[in-house]
Every structure is written in C-alpha cells, then in structure tokens.
Length: 254
Image 1 (tube, rainbow, N blue to C red):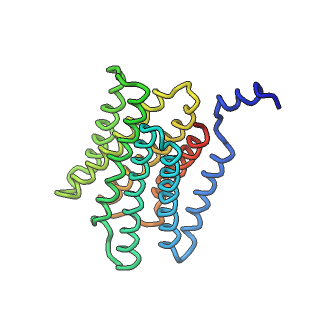
Image 2 (cartoon, rainbow, N blue to C red; image 1 turned 45 degrees about the vertical axis):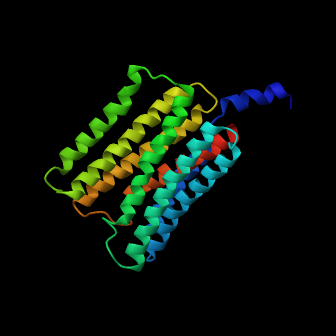
C-alpha cells in the first residue's frame, strides 16, 4: 500500500463505531446481569473500581510517553489523579458497604470523589490553553451557562428536602460536574477539525454521561432511593468507558 493511501486515514482518525456499539451492549448486559444475581456488590464494585483503575494506568502510561512534552505530561498526570480520586472513593464505599455494613454516604469516600473535579478541570484547562492562549468572550458561555442551568434545576428539584451539609455538598458536586462539562465542550471547539477532534468528542460524551449520573445520583439521595442496581450506574459506566476509549485513541494518534 502506498504512503499517500495511508495518510488520509490517519488524518481522519475515524471513530470505531463497532467498539462504541460494543460498549453500549456490554453495559446493558452488565446491568441486566446485576439485576439477576445475588452477589450484587462484588459485580458492581468490580466494574466501578476496575474502569477507573484502567484509566489511571493508561493516563500514567501516556505521561511516560509524553515525558519530554511538559504540557501533555502535566495534563495527563492530572487526568490520572482525577481517576485516582474516583478509585479511592469506590474503594472506600466498598469497604463501608460490603465489609463494615455501613451506609457509605456521607463518608471520607466523598472527599476522594470530589478530587475528580478540580483535577479533571485542570487537565482540560492545560490542554485548551496550550492551543488557545487567549479566550474569546463567547468561550465563557458554556462554562458559565451550563453550571447555572444545571445547578438551578437541581436546586429547584431538591429545595426543602435537604438541609446543612447534605444540600451544600450536593450543590458543590453539581456545580463542579457541570463546570467540567462546560470546559469539555470548549475543548471540542478548540480541537474542532484537527486530528484529535474525534478523541475529544468521545471525551465530552463521557463527561456528559458522568454529569447525568452525578446529577441523578444526588437527586436520588434526597429521597434515599439509590441502590447498587439502579440504572443511574449505567451513566457512570458509559462515561468512564468513553473516557478510557478517548484516552487510548489519543495515545495511539499522537
């Protein structure tokens, strides 16, 4: 095959739609399995700890690959740290729920979970600022509008149901997760038309799925309706797998 026949495919960096379909089908099968077996906790936590652990590994492998590039090295360290936070939270919740038989929310695990947001926002900012040192005013729209809209809707839905720490911690998470989505959308705009555009589209899909999961989860906690077999878990699984796919794709592309 001639070189000029290979380069266009490389530049297009197309998505693997078969893999995307496989992710969707696999997660749905997992949810069905969770609702039909007795050892629920082991299956759920195997996934909820396994996927973040895989992202941590790939993140730091990418750091090693970009050891000579300070910007990418810093960015992917933060991505790895963000999912170390998720992993720490999942491990803590597992210990509380499956070993100690205690309600894991609220607990120190929530502090681990919250690490995810500032770390991943830092990852996004480093990537964006490297390619766009100066933002336009219009770029601030998703960063400001999305958190206002999402947190406003959530607050309206739960107002009067939560008091004290529960309400304010939930609101802090909703703000953080929606700010993350805003920066993710800005990242897609930044890399639009480039070789890694599809990578960032996958990343935003993943973040959007995580945001939906976060907002729904803290809504469910208001009414104490969350369970390990609840469908809300699918949004985190989808989100983490899409982020993992985008990370692997990014590592192979650049």
